[in-house]
Image (cartoon, rainbow, N blue to C red; front, side):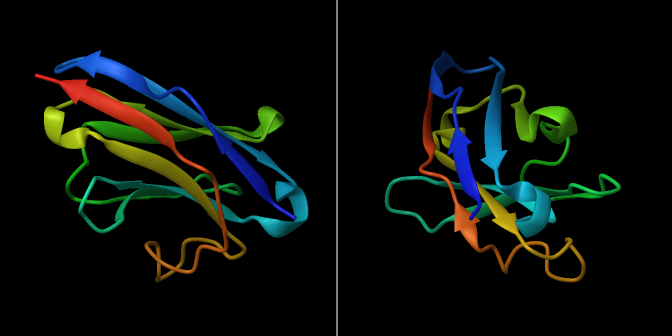
Length: 124
């Protein structure tokens, strides 16, 4: 069973950067891709980015392209979300999630395991 654990959230000022790690236990046989989502109060969950464990292909939502970067440390079974130039509207709970198939044609759906989330708050 895949278990995901996000960390690295916190309170930052606008313009700051944060890097969120997501540790994935059990990925070897059950996870081909790992993505990041966020959910702000009163809003629907929003897809941000996804990365294939094999090959490293990536896909980003238009809303974060250029500011957010997803990367991996295979030896640590960890995927990172680097967030730069944070804005108050980036305030949300950030989740990582895994898919048992590569990104393919459906990068924003088909996720089967989810972490508990980490809160990111950006003050103006």
